[in-house]
Image 1: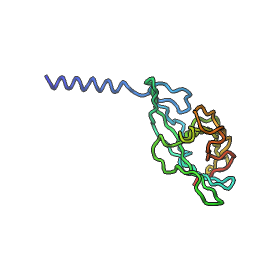
Image 2: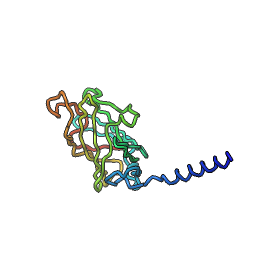
Image 3: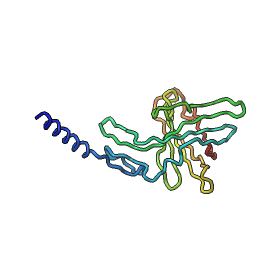
Image 4: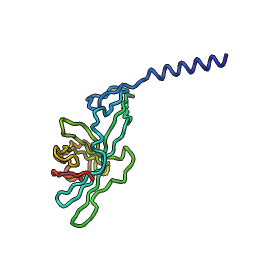
Length: 190
């Protein structure tokens, strides 16, 4: 009798688990259906993975992009979804003094990456930066564009501050330390 009961429980558990198949939607899906998996079905993300460098205004910028698959995002109301994501970290060196101005290349935890891929329209890819609390959670966006002629080159352009909604000891948002390039530059795959 115990064997029949165990077998019945196992079958019910198996049926329950098989009924909870996650809905897979393309990464470009605008909304996040509860419980869905926004998967990189179009293969957008692998192109970015790796290290890219560029120089402007006597500063060298190094960006490292990492792909995270099926990352869980939860909301306070209990909703959730999974998503493939590209996140980045970066380093800035003043070439005139060889001084490191900013470096978060050592971060490894998902939550410590400050740059994330937001969206793309045609061949323009928008990324979002959010700094730490010590820098007032300062936020900005920029665009990366793949080169038509060279797959190992991308253009960094359209740096723009996002509205800062947090209390901050700095008088203006422009006073908060920002180490991302504010001017356009070309980044080369390393």
